[in-house]
Image 1 (cartoon, rainbow, N blue to C red):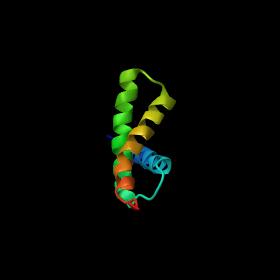
Image 2: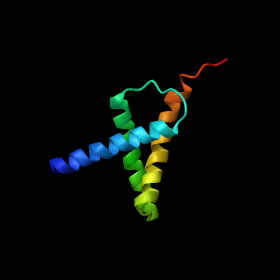
Image 3: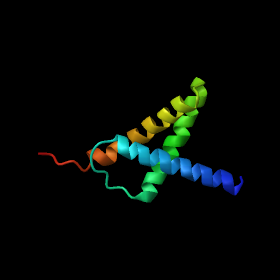
Image 4: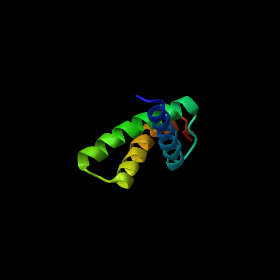
Length: 83
């Protein structure tokens, strides 16, 4: 693997993780590294789903965001006030 492939994968993970955190309402007490890890898993699983379904770029990107948002949800619900 070349350094360009690694950097572009890392950039994609940051973008997917950040957008996934924006989609989920509320406070998520997670840092940058966990956001990148969530983005990496979301990007990989979303890419697998998009490739298996034969989707184009934008539908695959949406699947990556949805998977990332589903991974962020436990952090959001775990910190809500229970009033």
